[in-house]
Image 1 (tube, rainbow, N blue to C red):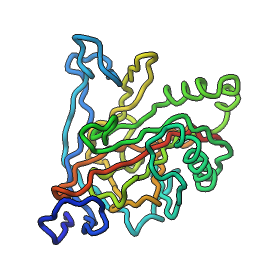
Image 2 (cartoon, rainbow, N blue to C red):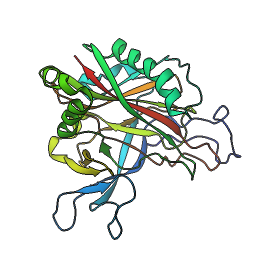
Image 3 (cartoon, helix red, strand yellow):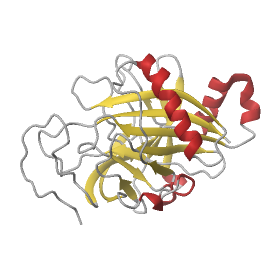
Length: 285
């Protein structure tokens, strides 16, 4: 059953302070992976593809699913079991998120502390990049409306070798996790919320490695096929002091979190588009 807001029309808002936040289970169409029609291995270009080439060679498979609100049930979920976890009451000294160097100087140490304090067994953290997403038409990166996982076993292992160099062989003998720390920048979120699946509900057979082609290197992400078994969640009205830990890889337990932004039918014209940042981390121990 979809929860709807009572207000049917709203003027244009600059902030979300006076917006009635949609809560509860909702229905939405998510975009899942469809294999290339010619049976070839899937790939996509991160930036502009070579002349004459499409952006990607695989297709889309839209399906309507139920997306369950975890608001009020935050303690029911654990990163080791469900592939995601949530944290509340995290304050930040970084406010603007417009300068990459300043983000690395001020926000990265906060993220590192958050992971060390909240991920059981974590002994060492290496933050290797971040992405700021904004819903403005001219934004460099917008919310991604395609079910995916940022890393695969192959690409996570390559990340360890790339960033940790000579230490990599020893580190790979022990537990390695790759975790995205996701938060909004203009919460509470009322548009393009993030949906994330319970890792246990999406079998490995529905996770497909996709060659991720950069101008200077090739990595691998994962497309996610639709499965009737999939159990999807979101965190309604997520605020700036809340964090989602999205586990993309775990060398010990294998829990990983398919995720995607989705179009919420309850979002009204004039409501501010979502802005967010995700920081990607290698977590050792």
